[in-house]
Image (cartoon, rainbow, N blue to C red):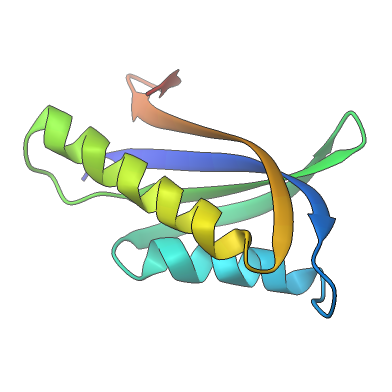
Length: 101
């Protein structure tokens, strides 16, 4: 099964929400349709960034990519209910490298 990752900047929390809700929401949104392999929080230039790695059911290359895009957009929408966000990036693992979609 192909592996993908979605990365998004977290620019703030919405009132009444705890920081851990952001990752919980991200994992739940992606995990609703795909197997989540890993997740992590990084601070890049002072800005929190979360990454969720997940697998997509193997089908046809373009369909796999579209499924990954859909999962990433769902993740962003879910996160936006508890936090404000910045740039969303999606990448596919290919020959040991992460290639942007």
